[in-house]
Image (cartoon, rainbow, N blue to C red; front, side):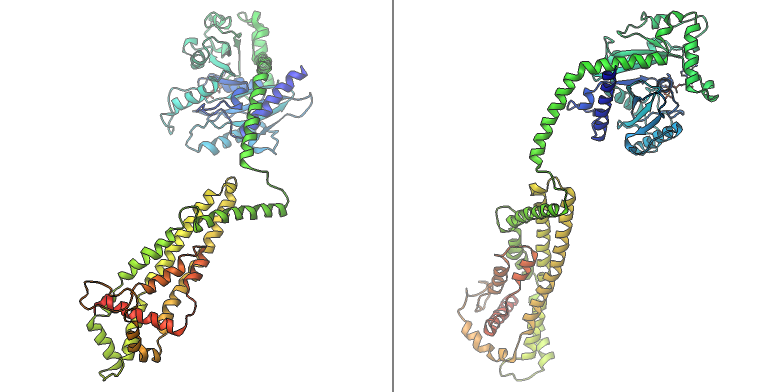
Length: 578
Ligand SMILES: Nc1nc2c(ncn2[C@@H]2O[C@H](COP(=O)(O)OP(=O)(O)OP(=O)(O)O)[C@@H](O)[C@H]2O)c(=O)[nH]1
């Protein structure tokens, strides 16, 4: 017997592993799971059929929640482990590994609490099982799954769909060919109307794997008996029917303990005129032994298929492992090395986005090629350099004076004012590049194969990158604005003195008049300064810091700077049309 007992123990261990790994059959039935390959006893019955009483009687303990309405709302996987005589009885939940329950009323409360934890207070049902192990000298090795009672009507506060939800959940357990069905029906009801038998007949029409249990024999009308059912004439099953007498509600109220209840049940059958000839094959103790023996033999017959499923699963897992990659080292030094390696992998992908190889970095060109010029064109330069405003600014700054060269103060203000318009578009370009880079970080993290199995590192990496980009944006913005300010402030007296002369030199430089529609052709190229900005920003599409660093022009020789300003004035004039 020792080998057989350890068989159930082995299956129990596999079952616990399944629950931990989230494998509890799954109602979608897409793949054969290990859980489904394991034989187990599913307990099915209508409400108040005596299901809880049978389970408690098999365990020999009061431990199941009681109450009105639908009390069992999650499957309860009950694993019974027989221990040596004299050992202390205790229970243990899979979700509370390190706690031994010796007080079974606390087991009851924990089942209730754990049910609510998943289903919420609205009394919904959930297919996620609760796993409870009971270690006791008074049990046989057996695993049973208590399922919600089949019901016909939803009670207050429960959705209408709960009736069919329960039926579907119960069916998903009993339809598996490896499931042994414990179908519980009360004897004081017509067996033809039993919810349990109805469902069992549907999923196991030949009655091979259904054990019929008849409860409440003591509540039958006087002068009637259940022999037609118990002797297999009413409804034939391959397995023998077992009659049960549980504690009545009055017994429960009087706290009749389970050991006394078992004794009363034994006495009931031995002294019954109707059933004494069947006494040795009746009662909850006999039912427990019968089920245990049957479960063992089923497990034994299924071992080859379980073994092959496990081997197949191992093969698949190993293949998956190969794809996922090497195990991560445990010591901090090696871990740091791994993390740096992963960061480098990300860096590589990010660079490819910027330098080519992967799409996305080209959008930075778009900022300088399209967005910035478009924004510059929209600036209200026309209004600023309108004849009216020029006159106003010049007269405010210089007064009416007969200038020899130029109204210098007025020019200064006009140029400064016009340049300050550039601040907005300059800042906007920084923001636009920032946005593109942020998007590339997100994309690169998603595309870095090596990071696939490290979601936390992915999040850390994204956070660190965003933080750095944010800093770079601030730097970039400051630099861009400083650039504009520099251009605006670098106007020397010398510059104005040489202005007419340089204007002369510039004639013919560049591509000629700005617009053919202009009546007066203006000398000088207009796109040159813009081209400079983009030329600086474009080729070095690198992480943010680099971009802004490149956008910042090196301090140029004086005359080059001056020439650019002249060109700018020329453009401004060209835009303003006068
Ligand atoms: N006299 C007598 N009463 C029984 C017997 N079996 C169950 N009862 C009583 O019937 C009532 C319902 O029994 P439960 O074991 O709670 O039935 P259940 O199917 O688990 O009920 P729900 O979980 O509410 O669906 C309780 O009051 C039990 O005391 C029996 O064999 N004889």
